[in-house]
Length: 90
Image (cartoon, rainbow, N blue to C red; front, side, top):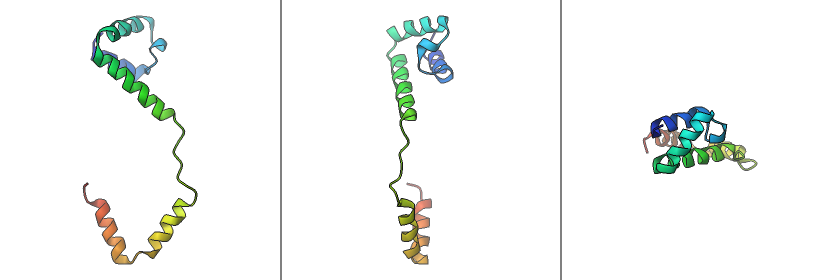
């Protein structure tokens, strides 16, 4: 197994190698023992999984109402300028 195949298996089967078919588990273990790139890929996949399984971030109560209230206070010119700024590449 090479690093590219290992990455493909992580993408298809997930980062929990113990859930992979037996022949791929052993090949992955052998690769991990000798490849820093494979180890990095596995670590990154685990970080992504942790981030995706974390509780969602919630906006503070009343945030939408405060945004709408602030938008209502803008003059048409200020609103147009803010819209143009939002479309301008960073």
